[in-house]
Image (cartoon, rainbow over all chains, first blue to last red; front, side, top):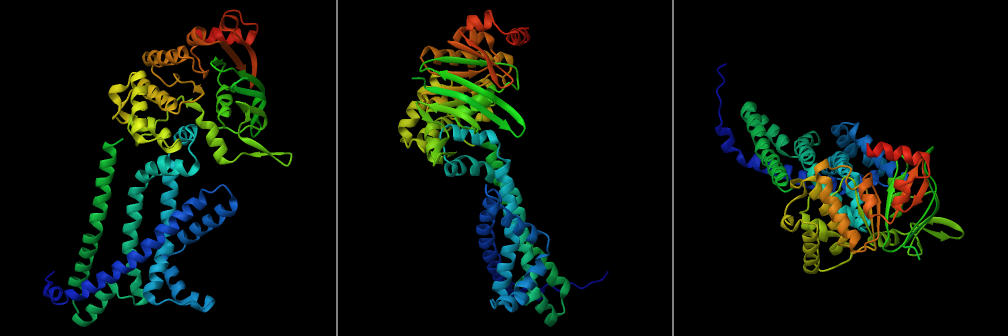
Length: 221
Length: 253
């Protein structure tokens, strides 16, 4: 295979990648913040004593987990404005869509982490007179967080990669910026290779950080 | 006035009727040992005493206050979280499986209740905790995480944690059942020292020797009821009930 790699296209158009990366970062930040807040709410919702809170949270999670993210994004961008009159630009639509999507997965990560804490731990906390909020803050969450970190990092890495779905709605994130660049330069191999490397460079440090945290906690318990 | 008063207590798990009308008074300073075969309801009774288990019928009073419930328009409803928590601070609980908090050092485990629940200063709580850990023979293990302790050490730390709340009564749920045989002695020694100090203690146990030596009264439970109660040399030496005799012959051999 005598393909003639021409990587100088990358140095020439690096600004396109930089701009794409900024949009990817914006999408990630918006979706992450929404997913984190909503995921926590959903997790406590699913753990609530009253079924009136538990059931809607469960329905939400199962609905978002059983439909494709791409369909959710397209629905929010094209269908929601018709049904509700609420319309966001494509960047915000994708950010919200991915946030709603990831919230369902975060919820399950948080819930599983909380449920993994042994019941006896709670008994011991109640026995010294802790209230539910103290017990959550002092005993359950510190232990649960350690269980949550690996799957949480997984879902977050997944979220960053899902931002490429924004290209379908013409959001100028990394993939869309790359596609545009290919139509003008005709160098898909170089550009897609660079794109893959950029994502790896963004995501690997996060994965590495989670491993460091796990090791740190293993030493302290 | 008894410090803990149990009247006609009933507890069901679905169809399983675990406690069938238990009545019992614990006097201040009294050492009470509860024995009986597994499934007889003794752990459930103990857990009801600080409301880790709810109960379906009957009453438990702690220093004259109804535990866990209050009256609302003639109907019994669950008491507020704050009231239940406040009553629990006055009882120390020691569990079969210790349940130390693994993300805290031994000292942090002991000061957690006083600092977080009672609002004591860390400095003050540390001093008291240090002395308590000294007392249970763990003065040198303050800054160690629980996973580095033996079972006997964990249980002694758990006893120190319960004592740090300065409870009016201590509840022990089979405190030596999860221990290797050679570690049982060190925990029983600590409990004997507490007994000598005059601590009110309710101990669910299979350690008949401990009951004989320490208890003021022994309670024998079977099938959710108290079938015999009295001084240790009555219940343990001359049991009136055939079921008590059968049980004792099984544990002692």
